[in-house]
Length: 284
Image (cartoon, rainbow, N blue to C red; front, side, top):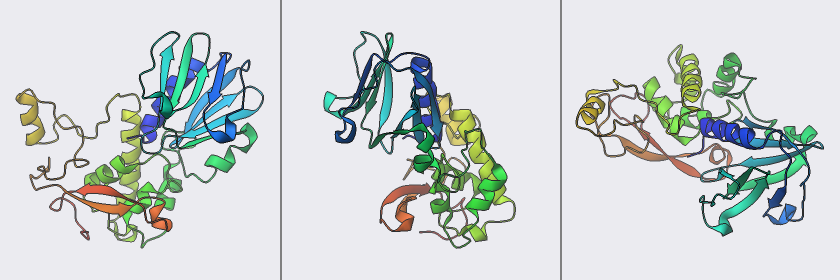
């Protein structure tokens, strides 16, 4: 699932393949930009901003994309077969003489002036993996609405940019509180530790092919799995409904909670996972 670390790594791969090279192919398969042609221009840079991608191209043009739930960018060498999905899922093709970047299932894809990037990402809070990272500002944003449930506040990209559904569940577990606890009721020092942990985890995972929040000694259960030749769990609670908690052995539960948009009126929800024994506070 694309979160800030996944998007950072995607930007890194796209930058390595495209930056400094002239486009020999430029194909956007969305009605709004179907006739756009930037072949002959040089890609200047590719950067991530929270969960947004900004591909900056010569002439003051930026291609803005967002992966949402299942979008992806794949990079292929010239002549290599494209394997990211069926052709009808391709939304963008950016090719140089040696590499081709193919965007699959991209729900957000738009061309804009580079000077206008703020219209797409200006609302975001401090970027956990960006040069503007400011933990004090992130804590202030996160706790600005004391009545708001922690899980909703963590997903709101205006508070701090880069946390998605996986990290929402994992961070609440590591803080030993439920995602439904109002942020104003967090024990003293917990908001600061939550923000510091989020930054540490995204930094640790940004170059990994598989995200991990557990430590090598997370629990007896994890150690036992490793000793029996099975891969130790990489996550504490996310996706582990019905399985034993790695910390205490209680059964991990799942429920729905609004996402960052649902909290503001769209009604969308996503699953959250928690341990009812380890995590104190209101239970859904």
